[in-house]
Image 1 (cartoon, rainbow, N blue to C red):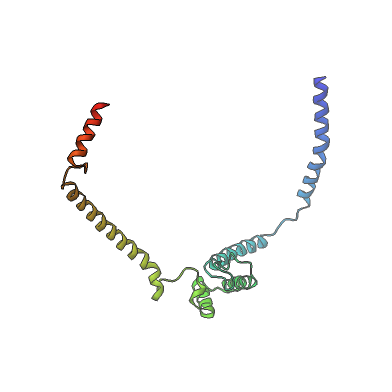
Image 2 (image 1 turned 120 degrees about the vertical axis):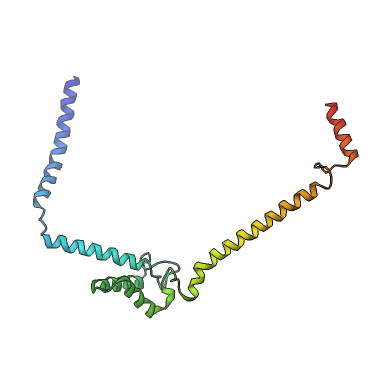
Length: 175
């Protein structure tokens, strides 16, 4: 009985798998081979799309808040991506394309400000603030540490007068 179940299960699996395997084999033989030029153009297009995405990631979408042209789904962002791809296809480099958009929209179109002119403050001020803040904290800690021994030297470290100290000693002896 056990053997007949196994044979029955194998027959069902074979009946189900045979048509699937035949269809896969049929599709494999019907597939048209690609010529070498189509593979080459696909590779060039993929490289061009990658470079266009790198440039689009550096540009701010004019209508979206805080999104790059690459992230935005707006129609103007899609048009800008098409312009970037077209200019890259014409042989322009990244800097030329960014300069084109800066000339059209102004410096704010660049997501990461260039470190020139007033934009240099964006890169310098955090470092200056960190240096001054660290110096201020060091001076503050030194002031606190120099003030602590002076207070402790004005009496005993507990801060209790003689009556309170005697009471505390008596209470501790009782226990």
